[in-house]
Length: 261
Image 1 (tube, rainbow, N blue to C red):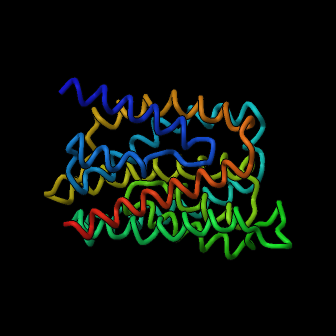
Image 2: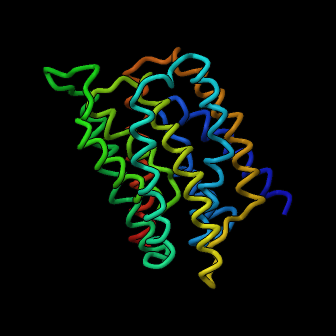
């Protein structure tokens, strides 16, 4: 229906404008809209969200590239390890976690504590906090692989999980946001391709909703560029609190839905 296309475009635009400054594509916050308003079935909502990331991602990335923010090695390391994880996650989502109930519980368990942790660390930072803190290469690889798999399970690309974790380690948002968005775009591209292949092996609604995915993505393309352009003008503390509150709020909403149903 035509109204769903415009709702999807508007949702992608608004969500990406808010989330791009903190390195999140916004796909995780698009999930309630797709499930409850647009009626996208599960598990098709996951590849639809990955399609959104693929279409929306270049907007913010192009802006960050113009500013030179993608030249750091953090982006390359995250991309290298989240890519195999998202393919594993896609297979798990299709063959082991098709039900929306388990889906909601998983989102709540992951995002609620992450968001609360980030807000707490921002308001009460560690005494010896380093603005250049970064996990070791081995820890970063394990983290990115795990997050890639989890992101593939519910169509996030991994950025909304990597963002709160690495931000709580003290990495500046100006460095973190471009890296997590680059990882999200790359893993979403691989994940969407994996779901297209898996759709041929499953009788359920596994293929993405191409019309809604493209409509949401086009809105996100514009919103992502606007959000990336706004980021240098926003204070670091506000960005960290925004990321934490977004994650905690969504985790709470999904926990409530899971208990009600």
